[in-house]
Length: 256
Ligand SMILES: NC(=O)c1ccc[n+]([C@@H]2O[C@H](COP(=O)([O-])OP(=O)(O)OC[C@H]3O[C@@H](n4cnc5c(N)ncnc54)[C@H](OP(=O)(O)O)[C@@H]3O)[C@@H](O)[C@H]2O)c1
Image 1 (cartoon, rainbow, N blue to C red):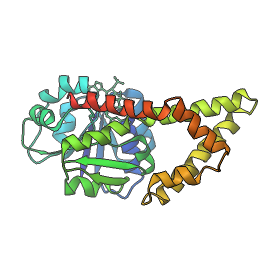
Image 2: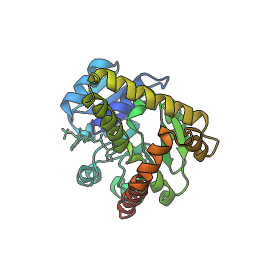
Image 3: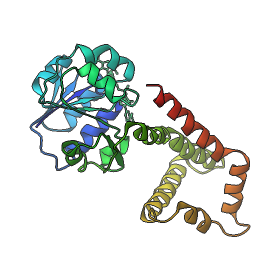
Image 4: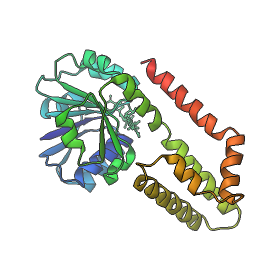
């Protein structure tokens, strides 16, 4: 299996790192030269990685092609590439729908949309796939938890929640900086906050078959600190703003 990546940015870096640390069997991975720093770094870190100067060379030489450029770049370059019917094409582009990808690819290849997230480099996290595709599922099952979605409209709800990664990290940053401002050393503050949220997330995963309301309730003592925390944030509109933001990300996704 020869894997080719059009666009070597943040998400390609995470996916390639995950693949190279996994049991996936591949003969080579060809990366586009851009971004130069990331492609060089990946080639240095792992075996069987090659860098191509030209996107068409990647398409010519690989049987799996991953589209990992921004939507603006995708609209400029994908339709100029000559794909083959026999190829598996996996698009990571979050705001280009299947019909538009098919139009740009032109040939009737095996095309799917996948939304990997950066923790795929650790072989962790959900990996939504649309439409269900056994080849693509069998590949990505080595890199995280595959979620197959039958309908593109439904899949956009998952894409919306993936827009909450940066807000999550911003919350960790805000809390770490708050501790730091209170006199706790930055590295200690960051270690404390990240391990706190790791433990909370692991506990949430273990309990994910129960209603999450139970975790919210069980983590509060009557008149305790967590009760104060959640009530004050509710009053301040924090959770309403979360819903509003998810809706507005979804609205944007529904336009494409
Ligand atoms: N980041 C995520 O967590 C994530 C998750 C799921 C899906 N996605 C999707 O994945 C796609 C890429 O996201 P990203 O975060 O990886 O973006 P990114 O870091 O900006 O990477 C895009 C890469 O494309 C390269 N590029 C630009 N023009 C090119 C061309 N003509 N040929 C080949 N490569 C070219 C850029 O190189 P230069 O740096 O040299 O300009 C850049 O390295 C987006 O459509 C995004 O929606 C991202």
